[in-house]
Length: 100
Image 1: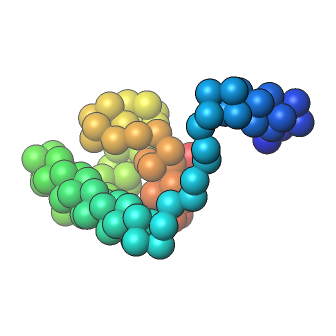
Image 2: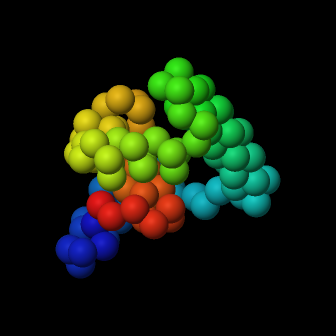
């Protein structure tokens, strides 16, 4: 929407026609959303660690060292085995100093 200047006015007209008002979230709502994201992050972290444990790895760095460096696995294959998203896996690989 931001890339196309026409969308801003078109969207505004459609919202006006349907009598829909765009309202920003309150500070309280934003805080609740942030808290929910933090809780979800902890849940996903626990799931990832549990999966690494099932595969008999102590941490993600050890997993990447074996699968990526020693065995030459693709990102897609590791992603499937771990059950994680591509963006997350690539970000973690970069953070830990592994080549993509």
